[in-house]
Image (cartoon, rainbow, N blue to C red; front, top):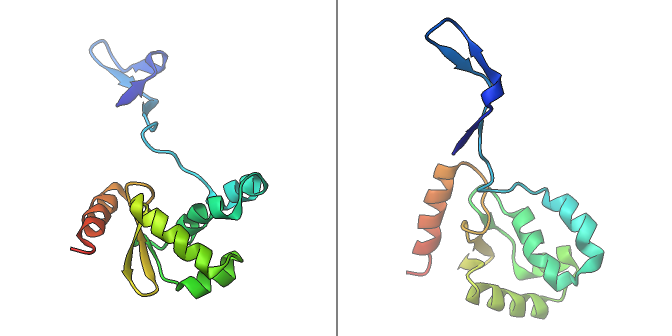
Length: 131
């Protein structure tokens, strides 16, 4: 869990040493700047492939996207019927769930905003949708 740089130990006295540079391993999660990623790879993929990233970029702290398909269609410059078909596929793959008309929640196991505790609460909330 933690990585200690042995060479950074400093002797305080004969009995004790002090470690400076204890680094927590952070390879469990990755941070992305979606706006930059979309800008870089946008020309390499179809608009349909980029839409899940656009959705993640627009989700709020509750992992929700509060937009109708009409609004998304205009904002993403993508046909509403195509979005509807894509959303059906994304729901089947458990990428998102429809909370109510004009509100969708992205699976926090895929992406979330906030702390690890927030994530646990969001996962519980996500799995309770539609029950």
